[in-house]
Image (cartoon, rainbow, N blue to C red; front, top):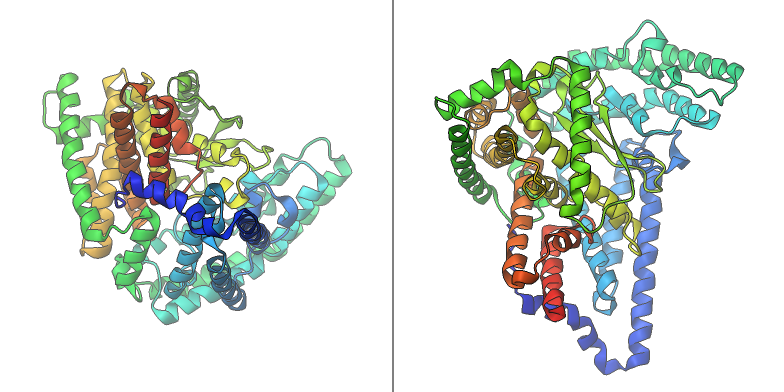
Length: 597
């Protein structure tokens, strides 16, 4: 957790810009503030445009179609140029007079500076030398089509241009991986063993069977038939002559050169500068100064607390056996599973609609952007998590989507579906992202920003809001909530265990299975995710604990005047920010509520 900040100090910090400039006189203050604000917002605007140009995939995900015909340049020269740019940006933001900014601009400054400092700090670790993992990379680049509009001829022409660029993208990725091999900066071999099958899915005899061809199977009737036929023919030719050969060569490189050269170790500390790297990612993802030892201890304490709550549910449902036997029962009894993918999808959709009308119990502000429920694409479902959320477009032209995993429905228990939906859809990620995009008068980088500790902490906190909404009347649903809470507590233990304390992959799997009713399929995918993405999994529980701590503080300070709806709105009204920033905001919010009282 972040260091506690006294309310008096927070108020003093908020007032200090005015105090420091008071002696200069009103005209000088206005001039200084205007100059600083102009410089700051100019930097924000320039950086947003720069980011869209340099990262066309992000632009596409944001709903900005200007760069839909290209991929990010991942050449070594482009990476060096971007890193130099990051250093220049840090110098520019530090040169702006923070004391001359308004409270709102000061918050934006702090968030931007936090990001700029860490962008420069992480350069030394050369993460670009590990450009893919089992959950994403050049081997399934077609996944971006899920967020593209495909309404006009121009949309399809842009996609064909992107197809033309696949060989260059594969070549650049291969060059980065070779740099990683030379530097000993590679992913664990146990994870990379999952990749060959993903690459093979791109090597097809019939271009129409390529994952990249999927948009051409659902072309709108508004495009004339002759035009549709020409676009399809062009796409088939590019896939046959450029895309498939590129992946065929990549498959050979991966099998013969890269996979044998990947490291046996799973620990981040075994990477170059690994100890410093893991310390960095732990601080980066949690937005705190917590070290691995402290996080591990927090995890152990949370695991013990949640096990006690699980024992209560086991007793309540009258299960005659140990907690371990109860876990086995929850994993294996057929009544806890749907019969097939279609029934599972319908059940997810029904749960989402059950949640929607209860949201007014815990929020005053409901986002305008709608959301939907979609299956995770079949080609990645076996190697990815139970569900995830895809934000909508900034301009509102695309809804947010809650993606659910329908692969092997016999391992997707009913009792986890309520907590999962609360986390990934509403009031979890959809609320957090949609509210952020609808914030008035804030720079774009804050409207779409994403700090894992805040965003995933909010998602996990949202699971517990199900109690406030009356959605956990079934004890098995409550067990699902506890299982998901345990899942995130276990993460603190196994992530630090594997990456800093010498735990093996099997040791982590066993610990997870011993303390959670989640199925082996899910647990294995989760453990491999933590191996591939060191430190990221630490943010969820740390963020949830901070938001829960702030709720308890606000309730205690405000007493009968505490309104949960207003508190939840206050947490979301900053957009995604570091936890220290959120803490200061809520302390100020409590002070204002007290003044009203």
